[in-house]
Each structure stands twice: as structure tokens, then as C-alpha cells.
Amino acid sequence: MKLELQRLIKRFGTHTVLDGIDLALEDVHCLALIGPSGGGKSTLLRLVAGLEYPSAGTVSLNGAQIDYTDEALLRHRRSIGTVFQAYNLFPHLTALRNITLPLEVVHGRSAEDARDLARATLDRFQLLAHAHKRPAELSGGQRQRVAIARAIAIKPQVVLLDEPTSALDPEMTAEVLELIEELKNEGRDLLLVTHEMGFARHVADRVALLAEGRIAEFGPPEQLFAAPESDATRAFLRRVLKY
Image (cartoon, rainbow, N blue to C red; front, side):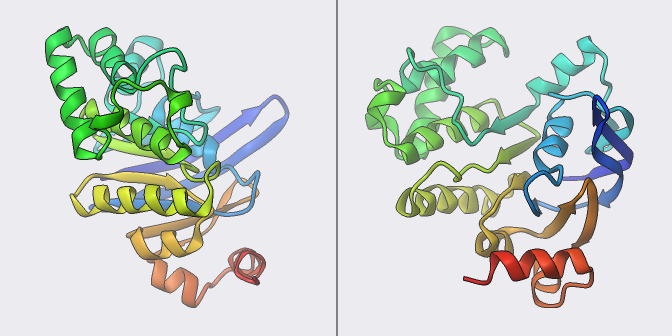
């Protein structure tokens, strides 16, 4: 994954959420965004996904600057797999249909092709036995794995994960984190917002700490966690690692 942010600003009304962010990374499979609540992590993820419009500045992904015009954004969104903390599965559809529907409607696959791809993806994630269950019939971990399967099935250039374990208990959290690590080890490109510091340290190639709309620190996880350089990073890690 190659990602470049130049003087990126995002405002909601008079509130500035991202305040002139600059970042450049190349040949990174997993970037973890960490930091205090309200620091701008999810907003940055949504800008990369093309789900929000920047107030100023540019975002480039894999060498192409994102064009935030409506028609171009539709094409960009089709190339991105996004997983949210609340699953965003259609409650009235089965796990299988939650995957086949976007493949058919958004990506133009035939019903047969979409079904074959969805079944293969569910099988890859040990979910094929649950293919005909609706989300309410699945555990939280299973629902999130279906959401990840849906994101992977479209063969995205990058998978964006926004706090994918925040609604899960510890056992289900471990189940989903193991799956994300598998994806990274397969060579998939991931951009991850997480509050799981141990996981970020273990799986990420680079970590960026966002605070008050700015990147307070950026670097390899072993450096950022073991010897943080900024006051904001030290203060954040003291709080979250205290217990």
C-alpha cells in the first residue's frame, strides 16, 4: 500500500477534525491509527474510503490521487473494502446474500458467479455452515467475520477497518483479530483504526497516533510504543497501558 496525505483538512461546520495532516508511506501492508477519542482517526479512514469530502488538501492511494467528484468517488468506493464497528450487515438478508448482493448490484457479477465467490469466501473464513443464517442468528464474532468476508470478496485494493472489535467480548475479539492478522500475513493491505494497543504493536508495519486532528507521532510500532518521542504519545500510552 502506498498512501500520501498532503495538508489534509476536514471541518464539520466550525469544528476542525483534521488540521493539516501530512503523511507519506510506501510498501506498507498494515497501517494502524491509534489515539484518543475525537482525534480524527475514523474521519481520516472515511476520507480514504471516499465516504467524506476533504475541506482542503489531497489524498493519494497507490499512486492515484482520489478525485472527490461524485462519479469518480463511485469508482473509488468499488475498489475499497470497508469494515465498520457495527457490522453494517443487512438484518433481513442471510450471510450469503449480504455478500452476493453488492457483488451483483455494485460490481456487476452474475448471480451464479457472485454466489460461487461468496460461498468460497465464507468457506475461507469457516463460515460456510452459517451461510443461510441472518445476522441475528450469528454471534458478534461471526457477524464481524461475515462483514470482513464481504469486504474481501470484492477483491479490494485496500481493506479499511474502523474499530472492528469495539462491540465484541474478549473471546470474540481474539477471534476477529486472528482473522485480521491472517489477512495481513497473506499480503493484503490494511488500514486499521483500533483501540487494541497490543494488536497494533503486533500486526502493524507502521503506527500513526492522531490527537487533536494532527499526527502526533508516526513510525514503526516497536519505536512508537517502546520509545515515544511526542508528549501526546507518551500521555496517551500512559493512560491506555496503565491497567
